[in-house]
Length: 509
Ligand code: BES
Ligand code: MN
Ligand code: ZN
Image (cartoon, rainbow, N blue to C red; front, top):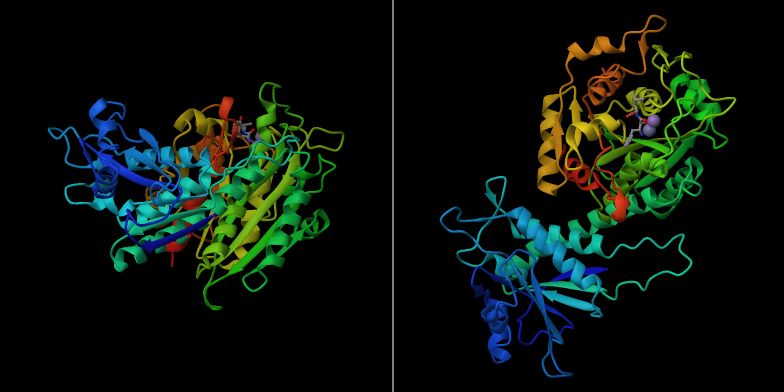
């Protein structure tokens, strides 16, 4: 997919699809121009009531062959303001509109489209995000993300793939060179985000017999080979982890015949002296629960238990695509959690790399076991910050549902940056308490701590567990159990929280 911005005029610009807008009761300037050029065929939609004044409602107008420079028009409604209540639109409704356009383009035979996005900044119109007017850069960024996401299809393991979308090129048109520049910047960023999001989705969606720890390690190697100048990678096998004393990580990996891997990717876009930000991804490529076996219903969805790792890969992919000028280290804790004769049992006590001992009371609380040693490993980078991303607890889904990612941090400045990054990306997180009050739920009679904290506050006690391994740096934990994938008819990985992570990394110093 190619995204560009250029200076042009709606009536002379050749395209297979001109995308123009209406808001309230009227056509915005480019729509008005086409309306006049076609003898009122767009205003007819409004007058007849065929185009309802709701965000994202749309109508196609198909022109005769060579009748006009534009082969078809997609007229999209931005919605109607109840001016007694409000003087501006919410940015969310614009995102809804973009999603609707993206869906239409994904199903259209058009191979290119020109969108007259500058019109949404016309006099009298206002879209607000967090109490501030949105910028052209933000709008075009979100537009590219929406289009990029809508064109993704899962095909890898289907023998009869559905036809892929025809769209190859999207152009944002404006009349002022300054605006063209702003749109271009946003498109560039959004296209990179979409690439990262779609990689995260693909990895999440791949079946667990394909997407194994070894598969992820190989992917890291391939990414590094393709981008030798900025990315290097290595992966530690179980023997190397043993040498480091990673008894917690290994207690999970040893139950499977697939070898566990600690995958390291170092992205160097910043100066050689500047310390990196570290991302740590939970990469349980399948979570059966181990000896504390999960019930059978929907167990297939535990292939998504590596979505934290997938989002870390997605962020690396996006950083490369953007040539971002930051240093980032990605650590992926990859293992399969299986029941076996050589698997850990409830009651086993293991020693973590930090020296702290852990009583495994439930082998299904495996994410924190692979993460804690990986978090200790992160110390060697003297990181500016460490953010782990994990499908860690079902309890987080109970607390926050599927809209917000759970956020915990030992540093409020870091928490605030991540919350803001999520708001800007429409990939929101909500901060949860990391209070000492919860820590005693992890007490054990036989080790320094237990790996579970009892029935109440399961997402909090999981974060408390991790906090015992992150005392040496500014750290945040994102519990994406509720946001990483959709269940039901739309079953599939969402690619969250790649956008949040990217906005954070791009704004962090
Ligand atoms: N991967 C799961 C968490 C999960 C469950 C995410 C369902 C999304 C949907 C994790 O490894 C797990 O099993 N956690 C347990 C912890 C419990 C044993 C303390 C859970 O949430 O039930
Ligand atoms: Mn589990
Ligand atoms: Zn798990």
